Image 1 (cartoon, rainbow, N blue to C red):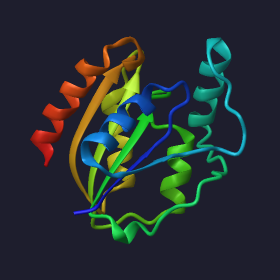
Image 2 (image 1 turned 90 degrees about the horizontal axis):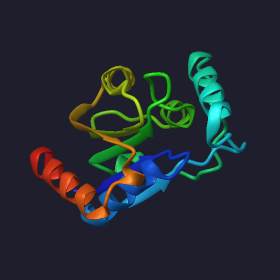
Image 3 (image 1 turned 45 degrees about the vertical axis):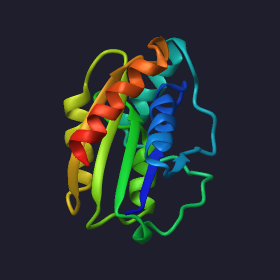
Amino acid sequence: MKTLIVFYSLEGNTKIIADILAEELDSECIELKPDKEIPKGGFTKFLWGGKSVLFHEKPTLTNEFPDIDEYDTIFIGTPIWASSYTPPIASFLEKVSIRGKKIALFACHAGGGAEKCFEKLKSQLNDNQIIGTITFTDPGKEEREKIKAQLKHWLHEIT
């Protein structure tokens, strides 16, 4: 079974999770990179992020993508913005056709919205089998070993 991890991380929190997953699963990992810089920190980040989600913006990504058909399982990770997934994830889902795969979703947040975010992702990925979801609150403030233990437990449950 071949696994791919695809994620977007503005401030590094989702990257922490993706990196641990890639290590645990010995899998390829792709960090989505928009062609324009997204504001980090402060009120500007929240204003820009909320606006971009509400207006369904889809930034151009600079990434090259492998042939998705080569993978059985795909992990998709996102920060939660306005109870949704980020615009770079929307761009990825529009650009790449994902059908008949096992999908695991992970998200990071500082204030909730995970259920709505996952429901929106599931509706976009309805031609696939969702095998699990997991959320993390500000993982950058947690000990790496604690996060790793949570991920190992989750992976045991879904694989």
